[in-house]
Length: 210
Ligand SMILES: Nc1nc2c(ncn2[C@@H]2O[C@H](COP(=O)(O)OP(=O)(O)OP(=O)(O)O)[C@@H](O)[C@H]2O)c(=O)[nH]1
Ligand SMILES: [Mg+2]
Image (cartoon, rainbow, N blue to C red; front, side, top):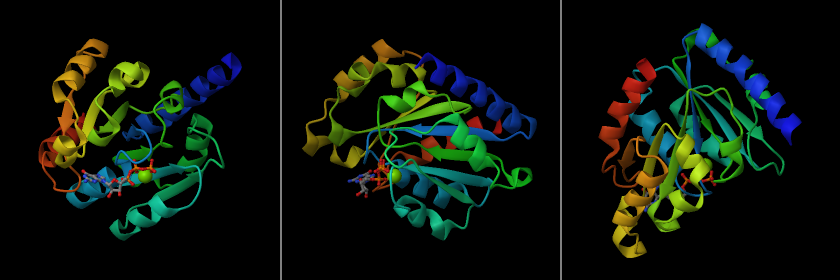
């Protein structure tokens, strides 16, 4: 395991060098299956693809369904099917980067495989990890899966439209998140209704331009 992680770290450093030399940011989106990574990418594409040059690396165990959902936005997309693997690694990102024209991009979003555990252990060479959680998963995720929330550069709480009917305790969630990582910015939003998405887009634009 140590060898695997060491190799991954070395390749992540190479990916980071390649991207920073060209001024490209990379954001590693991590959540459980179904929390809304692709839905958030759809909102990001709708709101920002006209002003920011973006690309997506879609990581999935199987199928191109998420990549198909994003096709209508006319942005470069590379699909990685892990064939059972529960996370992406930096070697697959290095290979995927060869498919892009790196002179014409500001940011690459990576949709990692749906999983709250393994992706948190693998640096992909990203600028930061974006942790997503949704109200229907329960309010206890930050305290039960602390590594991701400790490492995250930002946290999105999605599906706020379902907060009341899912019995999600917002206070518990916020206080647990604060115990795990008191510095991390939290954005509460609904990809379905659009509530809260503007504030997140403003923050995202700033973090991409830094
Ligand atoms: N009610 C509601 N449903 C949402 C919201 N965001 C996403 N969904 C729904 O949740 C389901 C899963 O969303 P996806 O965006 O596919 O989730 P994902 O994280 O990409 O899932 P995987 O790629 O399988 O890990 C879909 O049916 C979405 O329509 C939201 O804010 N509110
Ligand atoms: Mg998805």
